[in-house]
Length: 216
Picture 1 (cartoon, rainbow, N blue to C red):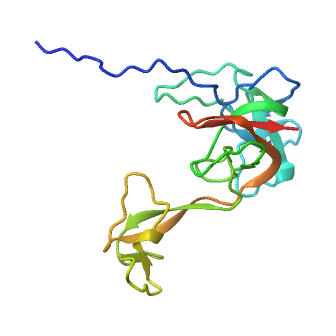
Picture 2: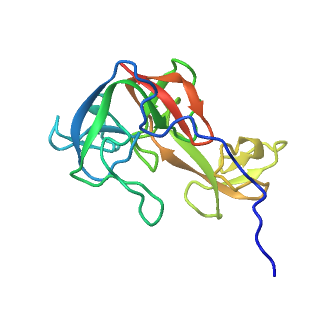
């Protein structure tokens, strides 16, 4: 009879949770109502009824629409069967408008103390924060004939308009290693971020993908 044996243990604890207050220094929380599904730690913008509704930002959002960050446990919520935690529409939530809080960061983020934390306003990472103001794109493998596709060539080759040097295929999607002869296309993950006046704090937890930002 064979039995499974656990050989890898991790006794570490995360530094914080998305939407959790970093410390008990002065902070201000506004009461709002979710318009659509939201999550703890996400930056939200005004909804249909300004001053009442908040929602996850979209491509039409502006910096002036920013309403704050959804505070952890400001409303009771449970994980669903897929281990996702979503706060349903019409639920009352607390939004931090001043203070220090843990937030989820986008894949390209490289938080630095007092560096600007830009709000991602579209794509799958809408509501997260990043250190980059520009749009973020990734190369992914495709087939010849796909619109915008380029053939990967060796770095010693002078590329044509429909080719790209191997070293230039970066960043690429996870689990894909570019190779000469491949065809790749650049796919935008999200557009330019919004400067909502947030600054990164001094703490980052790269294991859980969260960082502290400060709103004033």
